[in-house]
Image (cartoon, rainbow, N blue to C red; front, side):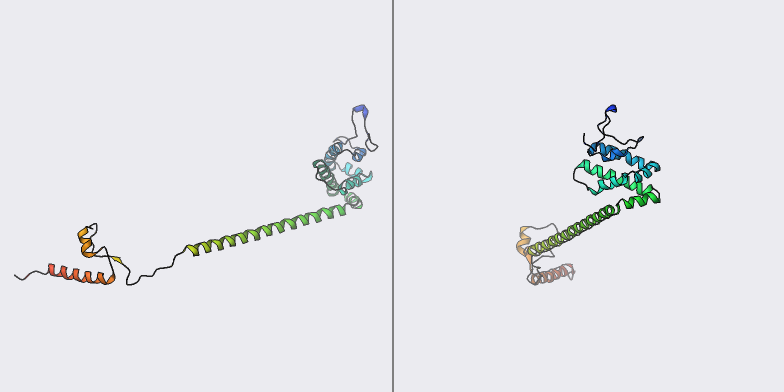
Length: 218
């Protein structure tokens, strides 16, 4: 065993640990990650529920040891991150739930630069996320405008010229009987005629109807 790790062979323990029923300052000096995480997990409960434990930590150098763990920083290893989070939770419990003297000892343990670093990193992350959101918004807006421009060009290229009706435009004969289109009638009147032909057919048809309806003199 290393010098900073105190073992208890009588109870088959490789290192001293903190439990919910027993606080031992030597457990915080352990260099092994797993027993230290176990001790910090129980210490987080003790700092929440016991004012006596909070006072003891400010006297025996426990707060300074926790601040040293925080100043070491976090790595990408999950166990190291867990250890850092538990140490930070313990210091927060001591500073928030402790008395004025306890809070003063937390400040004297040089906890303020750690908090300032955490807040600065948080602000940087928020600014970075905001910049990414703005870039994504601008990119989506440009893509939308580009798609609208391409769709407008597509419609303009496929849109034919507007044809205006002229005098030479052909129309269907208005006097054509509905549902009656035999070859004789088509040869006589033509299937389509222009406006001049329509007027002449209308006038001739009207004269024929008037003559047929006028009674003959007896």
